[in-house]
Length: 138
Image (cartoon, rainbow, N blue to C red; front, side, top):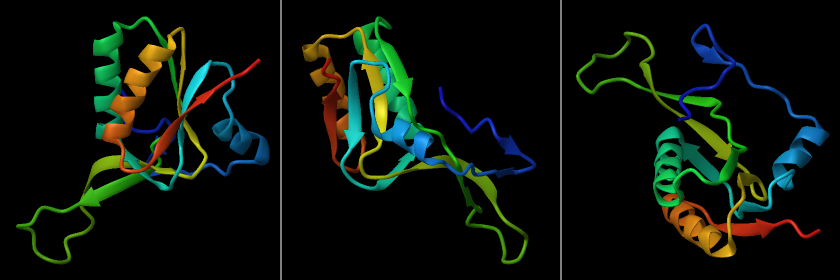
């Protein structure tokens, strides 16, 4: 399961600037046959991704190839309600990932169209923005 980014060091996350070739890889299917594409902007938390991955593994019994194009780069901190003002910043509660319009979120392979429709219904119910199915045509 996805927890926190690999570049996490000294209590903060270092952002990586994306060049044009890396941006194009987020907007196009690379290797796999099907993909789920975002039609709007928003945020995804690590709990949303973990629940989606858990349901996909339960339904399809790990017989598919799944690639995530998501990396959690924004930590969200929160202090408890009982603390007084001025005692520093709170602990990290969760991580989230910014999603831009046109970004490919998941890439899937070795599945049929019927299984892809089931996966799409799971993903679209869990996310707060619109998505659509993409397909590679050779």
